[in-house]
Amino acid sequence: MDDFIPVYKDKPAFSNTKGVELWVVLLEKAWAKVHGSYERIEAGQAHLTMRDLTGAPAYEYFIENTPGMFDLILAAD
Image 1 (tube, rainbow, N blue to C red):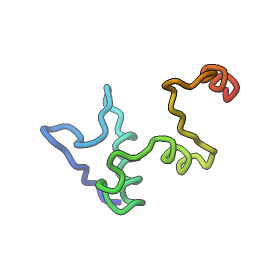
Image 2: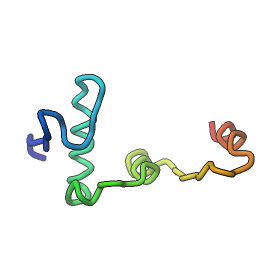
Image 3: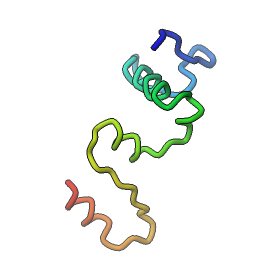
């Protein structure tokens, strides 16, 4: 991995943080490298990324009109 980070108007072009954290940008760059480019991770699904990074099962739930969603979240905790 090289030390070039894509920027736009003096800010990282993709990930943004509220502070000066560099790890977010570096993790995103490594993730893009694994997948071949930033374009291939654009609009990625967060649950798939978390699954790949942690190895833990991850699921996507659509909470609109889903009865018992709060109980499901509590059970997962």
